[in-house]
Image (cartoon, rainbow, N blue to C red):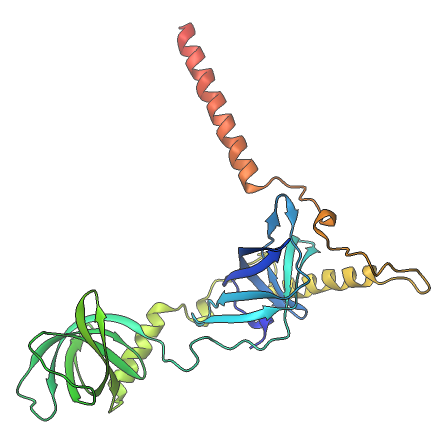
Length: 293
């Protein structure tokens, strides 16, 4: 996956450096364009930020719920007909952090468990979470389980209280809020269990065809919006190219902090401050009116 393939509305955390000081910034993906990923604008003391040095990016992709980490090549502000945004560029291939781990889903369902071939000696348990590779159980204190033991788990779930019977193998111990728990791998992956995990995943994530998009212009499609933004970005790149024979200054950084564009619109903090001041003025005026009465 490339940076432009990150889903709309995904949360983005940027670890960067300004003047030798490390900072963390939060923003949100708008949509991907051919040059990179368009995100909501970021400001610093009333100016739009720009990072020409590589920065560490952490994204929680809205489409699959996985966390991706990569390095950006540049993060620069761009002007479009829909306002100012930031463009994140990166040549890295995005790989999810949990590529080698199956995603787990909380379950918290009562069940019973037996150890080995003694299927008549049943003990209560709580199925703590489930995944495509296994599940974890919170056990009663009276049951003895060793790593490598076969555990036969049974529980009912769903509107029709379907009975699930799963054969597992204990692989590790851990604690859940002070209670003894065991992680198990699944020995017989049956169709019922696969369907159960798939349904739990659908409950957690919005289906792709129902996922709401961040729209800059609700009157046209997102594809048209992307095309218009790419046209705006292309015109900026053309205008920044020096004329043939023109002298260029290479020892001066055009993106230095003192050269960043000032934000003409009021920041959110300024708007809130003015709203509070106006509210206080109205309250004082009301008190004065009551005093006159």
